[in-house]
Image (cartoon, rainbow, N blue to C red):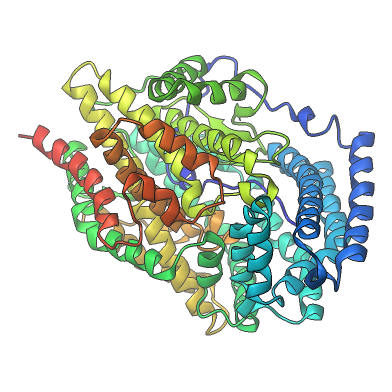
Length: 609
């Protein structure tokens, strides 16, 4: 059992900075809803309970799943969910404390100790999925048919049984469970290395977050200096990052080979409950659209910036007509909450406690995990949102994005531990929809064509970062894992793979400085969640299609939308989208989403006339 926050890799690709300006009273987490303190008696109480509960569960059910009637099977599930909830609460608390200050040795030790204990305590539970997958289909079907409350859990068991062809012997599965904590050490090495990096730009020492943020400065010289400094520091540490990637990719190759996975990506598709051909259709549609999207947009941007050639430090540059106004926290909260309430007051009501009750940690601080995420914790608690809020309009969109995750997680909690978690492909729906609502609300208030142009361009850039960049990242990962199967990769080998997707995705407008080939090193999902990144493109395309449906048929849309979010992981994407008349298995589905981005670029080009 491993519970950790979901990092939003996209946000490592589009940063903003407040330049030290006053942003107002930024909220911090109050983790006491989980536990009062790491040494609180409640932590020991729950760890002791967990150890005993896992042992009792194994004693009561191991070797007996095939003998249970529907009532006994339901009771077993509820006991398993309680174990998940207690273990998840402990790991959520330990993980969130750690991500607040990853360079603190005590927090790192507490997280590691909790992980080790929970891994040990839950080892007796390994039999559960193994024995479950040895049951015949008709036995399970009969149990689910006998009791509607038990039948509600069928989607969760369908996902478990999808792993049946890839299951190993009981002894091997126990061994791999125990070894899981060793693999996590490589993730922690990556996190701690990233958090510990220091950069110097114009005589000022900075964290990675602040340095990346300089890539969105109006001052081109500052952007260039930041890009070169990032390249220098990544270059100095590239052997460590290459070692982490080599080890993680090799570990995955061994696991995939033993489990007879047909591809490196297949395990991710299984966990996402999505068909490989649907992902392939998405990937192909986006790659085919590169010339109509990113290539075309960056050529426009090159002209706006008055450049003969774009450099990589110009990709996220603000437009010349863009103001450098800093958005204070109170204004950001008001903008997002107004947009949410404008869609449906219920959405704002669910979002309000995040601001009022310490569910958001907003300030950028030394040692804090970079980027942004929303972590659902457990269904009898509430989510927490981490930001590194620094006051640019993109940070407002990040708030809207992560708050969308939070609303989704609150609504889905009613499904319980086994069904609340949404596959990654659908987990981005509410977050991207929240961004779209906020963007549309802000666009409607644009004072003039100049402001509208800046806002449209900003949205197109975010969509390119969400769709084009993430599919390019996915292609990089596919190449990396395929190449690693042929042997150890040098840092230079990985650099070449990275650059092979850059020009293809960004287009002819760009030159690439020496050192840019190392920028793969800081993307966390490559280490934490291989092949996660296509979920962003999936979510953006899905939301664009959903929003088009909202505009075309607004009557009753909100109720259907809330029902979709409440479903959590209890339905397949086909069933969730059916009420809206949408189907992601239709190859033409992705063109609907991409056409919205294309339409925004059309409007920007028309403004040039």
